[in-house]
Image (cartoon, rainbow, N blue to C red; front, side, top):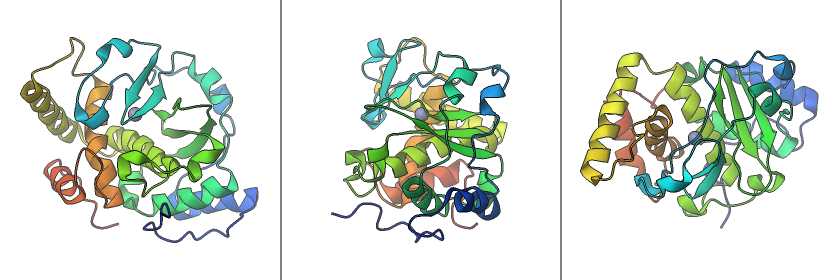
Length: 251
Ligand SMILES: [Zn+2]
């Protein structure tokens, strides 16, 4: 089954030059795609760490979610960056041509007004299933290996590539932090706490910021892709986002 075939067509050529990539994203989305100066960034006040296993929204396997390790979410593993941010970003690079083409297709799904707080998208090369990505200081980093643009994501019935779902996941962190008001974030948190209550298994350290953001992303992904995940249907996800005041219907 072809992956990503429901995404809009790319406006970039099939094999864009680096110049074209660096020119296109600021023009189309107001987002830089270069990695210039990232290694010189001051260390963040608050490091980004993915720490909540979020497979199917069920907080299981918290034993593996200790700080500095790797945690499962949505069937993958996201590296929890304990390394200083400048060291993390040292490997950051612009998207390669196949990634850039796909990134252009994915970003077209996101209303521009909710992308406003995101300044840059870069790729952090990964090996295996580690996901060193995240959102920090206006910068979305996508943890990706070369094969991810072709590898289907089983969490979405193999209809989308791992690169696509990873991009939407990390953009979701950025959207939560920059496009949602404190009140909207509170709405998400309330609902997340209710979910944890309903499950009756609350890990001692929940609700965390990351857990709350992953709860939001669990709806953001199917809503944007217009395709249900193993956890939530697309239409239901749109309704939940509407309850949070996040409208994906117009740009
Ligand atoms: Zn995450």
